[in-house]
Amino acid sequence: MNAKYQNKILIVDDNDEIRNSNAELFRNNDYDVLEAADGIEALSIVNNEARIDVILTGIDMPRMNGFELIEELKKNPQGEKIPVVVCSHLGREGDREKMLAIGAKDFILQGIDSPAEMVHRVAIVIKQGSYLLRIDPLDLDAKKMAEDFNYPANFKCKNCSTNLALKVKFNPTREISAKIICPECGLNH
Ligand SMILES: [Zn+2]
Image 1 (spheres, rainbow, N blue to C red):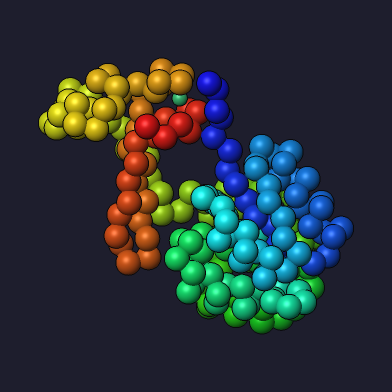
Image 2: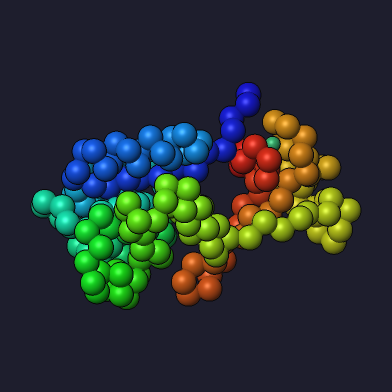
């Protein structure tokens, strides 16, 4: 078993050329890529996927546009935790402020921000609110936790033997969710 952790991105745009080129860009950067042509299709993918790490969406789309998609995601138990980055190819004045005001995490200008810049900024958004903490297998309740929850006693990854870490994530109301993962291969333990 050598399941390498891949960030999963959902790319939403009705323009095939732009969507395909962004999909290729993120695939080349080791992302698992899902694609949707509008907000309706994006929501149905969100409802059917166990995990999506980030959504990159355009603004103008038929049926459901980027604004409406962000509003719908907020009401969706699967979608409310997924950070959204807006990718605009029109560069319309005011869109940035509007999108950030309703909860988009970043606003990228297609064709002005370079592809490398786009990948970099999406990676930052994925990392926001999430922290990796080292586990000391000899410290405090670590040994008991390993026994009670069937973690390896030395807290090393079953897959690649890297020291496991506690991944802590804050949601907007500062509630914490945490899991034990391998920082190297991403395996959940
Ligand atoms: Zn590992």
